[in-house]
Amino acid sequence: MIKLTRLPAPATLVRWAPKWTADLLTAIAQQQAGGKKPPEELWDKYNKSYVKDALQRMAHGKCVYCESNIKHVAYPHIEHYRPKRRYPEFTYTWENLLLACPVCNNDKSDAFPLDPAGSPLLLNPCDDDPEEHITFARGRLVALSERGQSDTRSVIP
Image: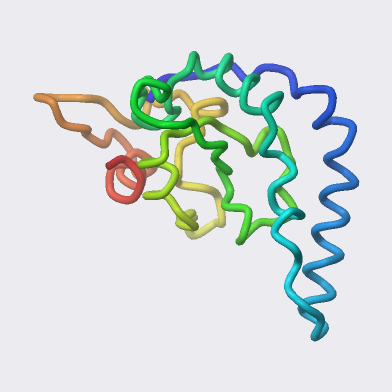
């Protein structure tokens, strides 16, 4: 994992994210009040080529976690730093979207460890400098901090 600089959000996402978020949260509230489950398309409006292309440019075509060149082995996934099923209010937030390979995205799943104060332990390569928290030694990932330990245990395959 390397430090990344977040690119500006795609204009279409900026324009539509507030409406999509409101629609999703309304559908979730209706479900909680005894209504039907929100349609899947309310969860996936971010999954468009303009979002994926921007994330690929930002991550140089690599998985933000394992740094594999994704297109050589699989289709890139749009990863939610904060899992969308646990944090639906961040489903369409640009700062919550990253590029991941299927292995890292599926391994992370809905896991999102927090410290006792409620701050994320999982590293975000756009907000954190991974070199402060993890390193490689003798071909293995080694934690340099509590946050690095969280990444080496629960996310990195």
